[in-house]
Length: 269
Image 1 (spheres, rainbow, N blue to C red):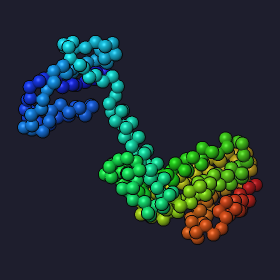
Image 2: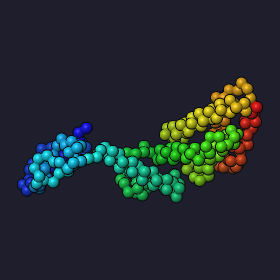
Image 3: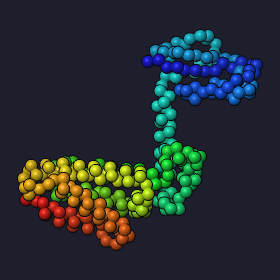
Image 4: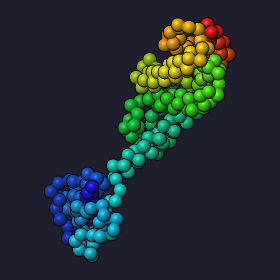
C-alpha cells in the first residue's frame, strides 16, 4: 500500500495561483482562487509518493532543509471519526432540548447552537428532527433487548411477558419522546423503518423461543408458530399504541402482562 502526502513550498516572493486546488486526502489547500497572489514561505517542501515504510522509519525524499508534512494514518477514517463526533453532539443536544422544551418547541437552530455547529450542519447528518426520534427509538429498543436475561434463565411464559416490559421502561423514562415518536411516525419514513426493524426482530425472536418451547412439548400440538408470533407482536404493539392514543389512561405494564398471559394460556399444552 502506498500513501500520498503533500505540502506546499513557501518562499518570500508572491506568486500568482492560476486556480484553486485541495489535497484529496487531507483538504490541505495547495493553491488559491485564480489570479490571487499567494506569498510563499521558504522551508516547506513538496513531498510525494512516500511509502508507508518510509514514513514509519522516518526516511524522507528530497532536501533535508524543508519541513515535511506526512500522513501515516488513514485520512478518510479521521474525517469519518470527526463526522461521527459531530453527529453524536447533534443527537445528544437534540434529545436534551426535546426533554427540556418539548419536541414541538425545539428548533433546529437551538439544537445546532447547543451542539456548537452551524445550522446547515444539522441537515448533513439528519434530514429533519423526526430522524432524531427514529434513532432514539432504535437505540431504546436495542437497549431493552440487551437487558434481557440470558436464554434459558426464564420460562418461555416469563420471557414473553418480560420482553415488552423492558421496552415499556423506555416509555416510562421518556414518555414525551415516546409520544412524539408515535405522533410523527405516519409522516416519517425513518421512524417507520425503525419501528419495522424492531418489530421484525421481536417477531423472529418470538418464533425461535416458541420453536424451542414446542420441541420441549410445552405447547399445544400442530399450532402455527409464525401465526402465534404475529398475534403476540400485535398484542404488544397494539397495547402500546392504545396506551399512547389514550394519553396513558391505563397501566401499560399490567395490561400487557394480562393480554400476553391470555395468549400463553391458549397455546400452552
